[in-house]
Length: 116
Image 1 (cartoon, rainbow, N blue to C red):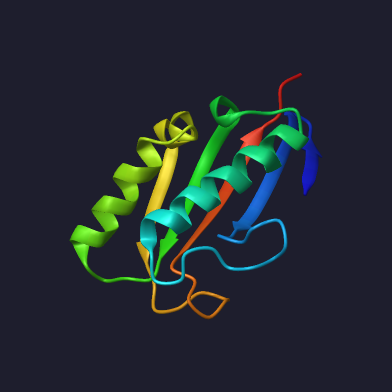
Image 2: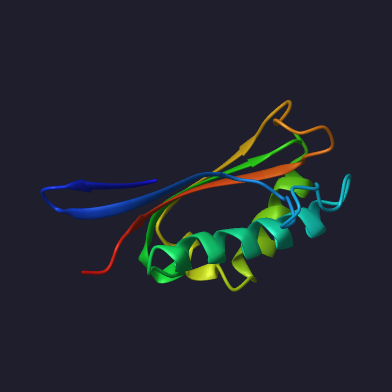
């Protein structure tokens, strides 16, 4: 979704899930595979709005885990991905009990300020 305010346009890409182009969950039970798919989907979503990771102003990462080591590994994987510049702004990492798809472990919300 793209919205406009007096300060410019924003792209809200809520709920980037680890689904492939056919809508099938990638990597059930595999945090790394799911992060990689979420990254790929987010890069495509940003690109469709004429934006890139450098235009992201806010992220929220949801991870089905209360284990700090798992949360840290997911954070490191996002920070080592092509989406890494998106995580230099306001970012939140949350451990949650469950996400929308059976087997889903990771989800990402991003807000990007669209280039003029």
